[in-house]
Length: 205
Image (cartoon, helix red, strand yellow):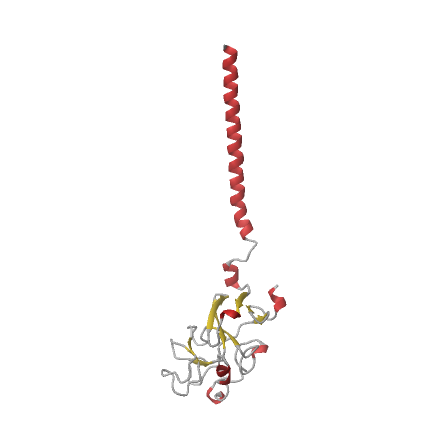
């Protein structure tokens, strides 16, 4: 009878050892899994990295003619406008009313140093921050806007101090802002994809 008691105690000890071993292994596996999560997450660009300067992609097919979208790059709002032929045509004829019509004293990549201030006529890309004191200009695309006058060709108006910009981001005389809205570096990967933050598609790799 004594021997049977010893066997029973050993069986209990073995069961406890197996349970403790299994529990330890399971706990270790969970710990490894939780440790791996931030490591794996670090393989993909975070929103923080994108905000600090990683290129930002935008699907141009989301924009209808005459519409504007805003994306964030380097913690700045980026205005992307799909201009209609009428909006492009409005850029001619008011150079005499602009402070820097040829963008000689303003900030833009070389490929945007033109009347349209863009790579192609259809799409305008601007940093949506007023060059006066950093407010966000509002879109006022309609010509002859009652608030801005019958001769208003369409563009942007800053709600803070009244600076006005045309549909290429060029600043009008009489505005507190002294230079045109800035144009960020950007590239057109194809007819649908715009990349903000690079000057060519190779730079997005």
